[in-house]
Image (cartoon, rainbow over all chains, first blue to last red; front, side, top):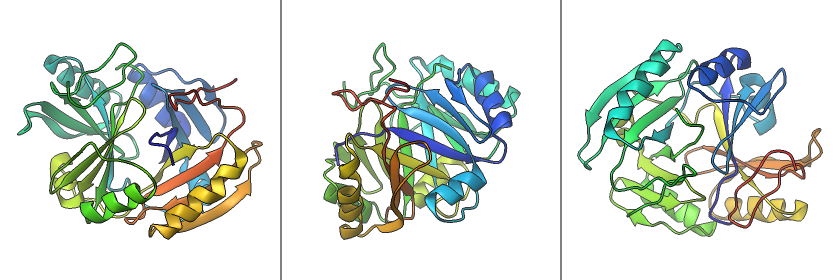
Length: 138
Length: 138
């Protein structure tokens, strides 16, 4: 298994509502159908899939937003609060307001309409290139 | 918010156990501490974080593997079964054996030691470049 990822799929109650949420944050879908919406990101694809259909596809029933988080790293410390505010304005919930971290950065969390967690972080140790890719150490 | 992702963090009971699982699949960590392990992927970072620490970090308690899936797309249809077999040999569980899909591909699912779902898929419509990045449409 090569050290790479292709796709992240979030199970959502209402794909249209979730699509509108991510569009409010500035993202544009590349494909949509009744049950699924695809957003191409930096080399991976982000999918919103009707939860019952995802459950059936992966062969088990699920509940809740789960023990995981996605993260969006910003290029400057002052960019965190505006992203959290935009998420809240779009119908998301603030899980944790931005605060300085012990590792020398700053971070906050919001939840999307289904409770999936997103960290919004500034990490001065992980450079972000023009294509939006992060690298460790710098 | 630019249309990109920086990091995926899975909450795990035992970071050493989870690290060993992903190492068994051929991945190499770039950094590790008691509570966290980082694997650099294609432009994003994959993290295994002790669940209690992730819960505290994101400001809420969580349970279970949740309604989401990560996906690893293979370059050839015959590569799916070996990846599923390797995951099972490493201590993962097969959620769904590989089967042909209605969208013209083939896919199966495994769960990692904490139950987080991974799809292993062959999608002839989404090319994979040398760096391991997928693109939609081809």
